[in-house]
Length: 287
Image 1 (cartoon, helix red, strand yellow):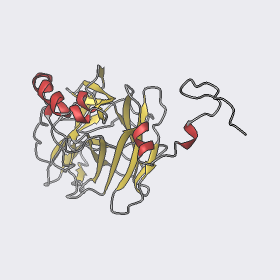
Image 2 (tube, rainbow, N blue to C red):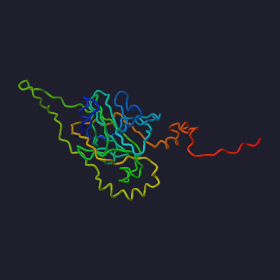
Image 3 (cartoon, rainbow, N blue to C red):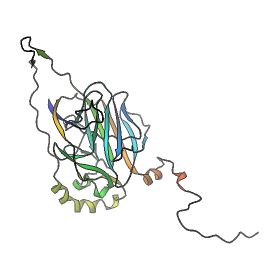
Image 4 (spheres, rainbow, N blue to C red):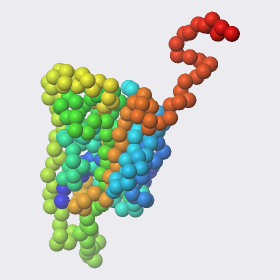
């Protein structure tokens, strides 16, 4: 059994523990993104609490997929609400990197993850650098992204979340003498410490060459390593089921890209009474 992290600062009084380091998942949504009916909902929201627009992709499969409209320079956080009625672990990855450890993510149960109690909501606003701090997420050009600093382009512009249900926990018995709980024979083993995140120094050393390699990808969006922010978390015990019960993938793009791909209808973006360029009256057509 591995330890996970739980984060303080929930959206409701019930949510006192919000995240646990062992799985990393990333989701975003327009109103609410459903990974599995009645299990979790996921949103990506800005610093003012507004939700980023999302366009679901109807391609079937066992995962929820949608496009997300990103805004240049906007700071954001990932909000995950647990509707399952039981504790779950969520592995969150941005641009293919685990948001707790900073390492390349496969959304596996062995990774650091956040733990959500029944009916709890968690908000994750940055790359975790300690149990007390994160560096904020913000939308930027890909060449300035955290993942590109490591030369990792394996999951450009994707917020991914994998949900893991908890294995049945060992039973506890109570002494009639002092009514103090004692663990049954199936005691939980000590867990290993979470993998440390990648250092800012390493990111800086790779940035020059990575920027050159990604020159042609400058128009694509990515997530930057922003300002430091206090966001306390604590370790909690959690043993995940072997397989994720649901997964969510959100591909974020700039509005102009979504328009070009036909994901959103931008035909109404041209105002016939407010042209983008100055024009002059032509001579009248000849009769």
